[in-house]
Length: 257
Image 1 (tube, rainbow, N blue to C red):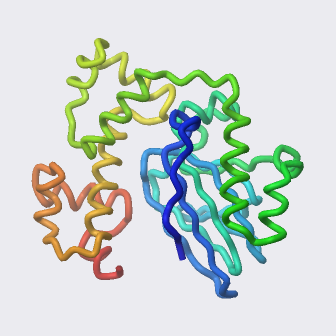
Image 2 (cartoon, rainbow, N blue to C red):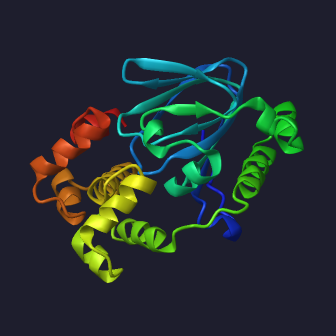
């Protein structure tokens, strides 16, 4: 199960976007599905059995703390309870600057954070010993604070990202470039270097996430209404993009839910 998401501290506002916490005291195996959201992230988990990350036909057993990249393909996390799973969405430019991991190499992949980097941090150890999501949350946020020392965010890039997020991806990229007094080519280069996506790809993912939120919100809105409300040209365009990220058509996805 998941619990209400904590707020990101103000001193991490250019580092992290959101934090999500899942936990279970049951002994059964669960599969947590994740889809493209435009952000890499940091995970801290504890479980009684190895945790497997599955992307397409590839799978990887992960250590308790790891970084994941852009998820253009559907990803499944196989985890056996009792467990906790804390995930922090990170702004992409922070990952390469502070962890030294090329953002492009992380796409649809994960990168283990060596145990030597975090085992001496008391709250990580206590969170595992006490199975405490509160301590796990504190541990991962304090770790990010330490990693962020000396990080200088690109405020223009951050504002461009925020503009796309605020418009739910329904925006014109050339207009964003003009608003920030740069060419569209310069904006595209910034995104590819620091986000690992083009601005158009990022906007497409944000719009997909908006449709996912609408479908998961418990409303009985027609799929055609969802498509038009969030700016798709037509329903077939919506279906194609939704299927590209989930491998299912929207009505099939909704029926499973």
